Image (cartoon, rainbow, N blue to C red; front, side):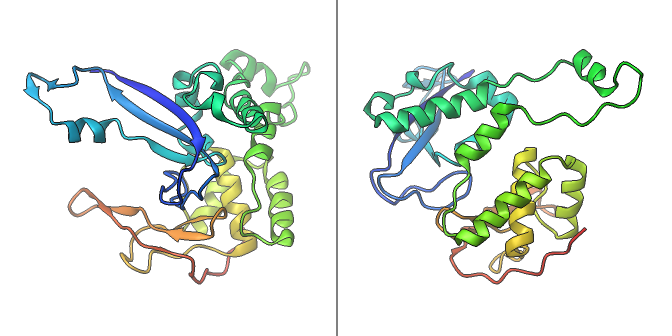
Length: 261
């Protein structure tokens, strides 16, 4: 049966929830965005079999995200297809402060406002009137404003934050292929949107490369500048063809030297 995507927003009631993107704790009273999927089935039955309340509750459990991390929850196409047209329709929106309501409106504008060019217009943009290659296109204004809106200093020093921002601005004109190559050279995660790749390379150049998980020895460590937490989500075991979960978390981890391209 099809699933219905539900979204909500609120101030964290405690510091117990974990962001599903960066895996860091969401501090009490900070703005968080929730996502859940509800099965299009009767509350008591599934394929003719009775479903216990606990199973139904788990199926519709809300997964919380930092406001700053929410844009990376899914890809751009998924966001465009599933987000409501306006955040004003979200559960809890009316209970937020005016300033935070404005932030959400700007976030939605960044996520849904910039339209992708068609294939025909892209081919036309690749060459100018004389048939020569055209200059590289600039990033859409929506993408730029979204990056600024969700960029936070967190546990970084002012100097580190300024340096990372400068590198991100410089890398914004790089190709995804070049960014992936640099990440691969440093054995870092290479998936995600271009904005994620840019952020990962910039942080790596300033802070160093993240090593493999010290507990499971295979998982790629994630780091969140919001709380300074290192965490490991696990890894895919090619031998058993299973996803192995790892719940290692720490605020202490020695990074490796970054290998420049």
